[in-house]
Amino acid sequence: MRAFRRILYATDFSRASRPAFAKAIEIARANGAELLIAHVLPSVGPLGAEGYVAPRVYEEMEEAVRRGAQKRLNSFLERAKKARVRHKGLLLEGVAHEEIASAARATKADLVVVGTQGRTGLARLLLGSVASRVISTSPRPVLTVRGR
Image (cartoon, rainbow, N blue to C red; front, top):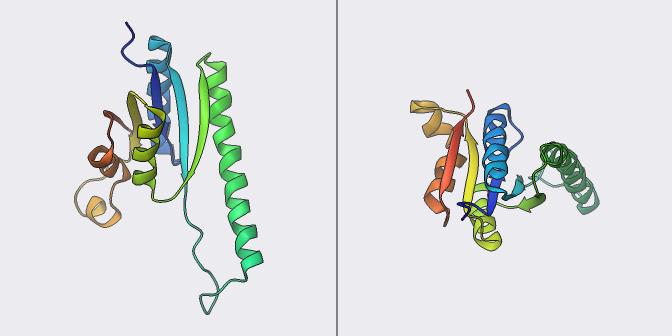
C-alpha cells in the first residue's frame, strides 16, 4: 500500500522553494504519486498617483502577471515530466495559505510540501510566514523543507 497517492507542492518560485520541489519529486517517485504543482497569484493592487488604474490597464497587468506565472509553472511541470512523475499544474488566485489549504482539500492531497525561508525572530514577525500559515490551516499533513 502506498503512503501517498497525491502530493501538493506549493511554490512562490523563490530560491527557498527549490529544495522543497526536489523533496516533493523524491516522495512522488518513491510512492508512484501524482504531483500537483501549485502557485498562488498575488493580487495586482491599484497603482498610480491617485490609486486608480483604468480597468483595461488593470486587466492587462493581471494578464501579464498570469502569463509570467504560467511560464514559470510550466518549467516546474517540465522538470516533473523529466523526472517521470505524474504531474499537474495549478494556478490559483487569492491569499496564499488559504488557497493552498483549499487546494489540498479539493484535490484530496495526502501531503502538502512547501519551502520555508527559515526566518526567525523579528524578520518572521514582520514578514510573516506562508509556510507556518499553511501548517495551521491545511486539512492535510504539511512537510516544510528549509531553503538553506
